[in-house]
Amino acid sequence: MVVLSFGPIEWIASIAVAVTLLVIPAWVASRSKTGEARFDADGKVIDDE
Image 1: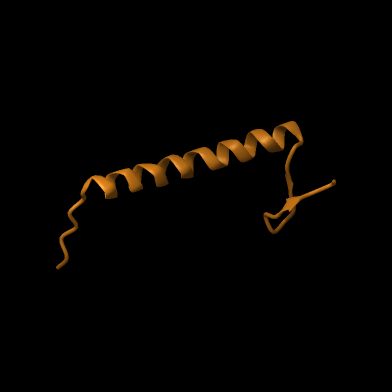
Image 2: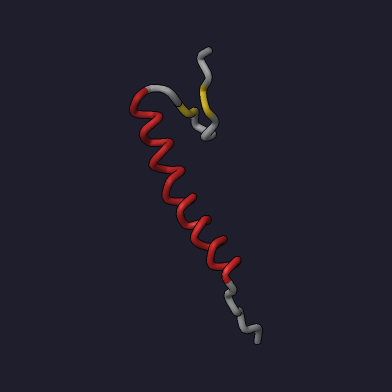
């Protein structure tokens, strides 16, 4: 059995991952609402420029 010990670096990394997972969907939603970013069925950004 492996016991995971979290040091400061692991805590920072886990917090950064959690924040990233929360911020990215909100950012994408805000961009899509303003029409700055649109996505096709595969999740790729549609660039009209």
